[in-house]
Image (cartoon, rainbow, N blue to C red; front, top):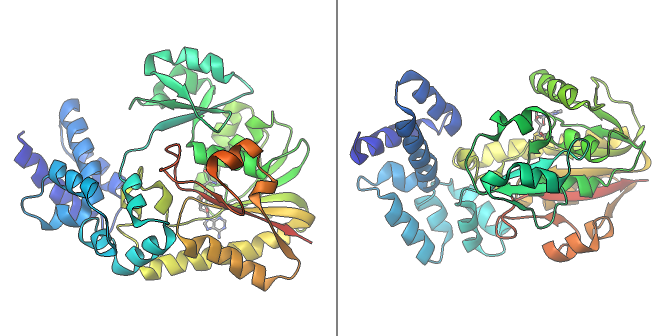
Length: 371
Ligand SMILES: C[S@@+](CC[C@H](N)C(=O)[O-])C[C@H]1O[C@@H](n2cnc3c(N)ncnc32)[C@H](O)[C@@H]1O
């Protein structure tokens, strides 16, 4: 196959991602065609990189990936570029721009992002895992004490070390949610949007199974995956349908969000987003914040987390909920996290990460105490 054929295929697939996730579109196409592994890899690399420049890809008949990359690299971005080059809806481009200190920071979301693992301290030390994975040139994460970054694109799920539960795949920013929750032995903790359990598993394994940890989610399918993995790892995570009222020391609220902070991995999160969808998400986030308050006991905290950098889903929701409840107080994250983390990430009130710093995903966190 020559490069023109590749480009034709990619342009056709790109048109479908307005309605369906890019991963789904690509996997479906691959399953319907009998390409060898080289062609599959090349198509995948080209597709997932080209759709970062979505509007150019679908509208420019002479689209050339290297040329557009160089152009973006050497120019000062404008709001119009977010639409004209990357294909963001106009209102979403405005929200992106108002949420970034410098609109050029958007460029940091265009790279691929490292493959980051979190050691399971119940089964392995970070140093030992570094040596077991030495063929993949691992390095320690700079901030999370549990992380390892690999400079490699291998499928780590196939490794014996993964099957034996020595590590999980988890970005460094997500690993630091453990530090933000700062769990203590025997604390009663509820993970209200536990999904497949990335954060529940991190909380319990990094606490050596000492937490009274309850997990729930709207999706039973996701909770089934959580149950299976926590069983393999020997972790005590109780899946509950009806969490107890005013019972928990801490409620982790990792809400559904735009995923704007993880577009290095899920490139199309923002391409499909428009104002209505975003406001629908914000509405759900606010409902969940209101709900979380009922589960926390007096003196307990809610740890609100998103993998988004959009102020609408972050700071504006925290301001909203603080205005709604007089018995809720904001706790600055610099009073919770280690001084070393606070200093390196330059944090004060909120927990905020971005690929510009230590190549982490874009995460947001805020802590609220209930009185
Ligand atoms: C960001 S994901 C959670 C990821 C998970 N905490 C992890 O670390 O793997 C958000 C989750 O919220 C769940 N969700 C959406 N609406 C919900 C609701 N009303 N109540 C509970 N969970 C909800 C989704 O099913 C999804 O699993």
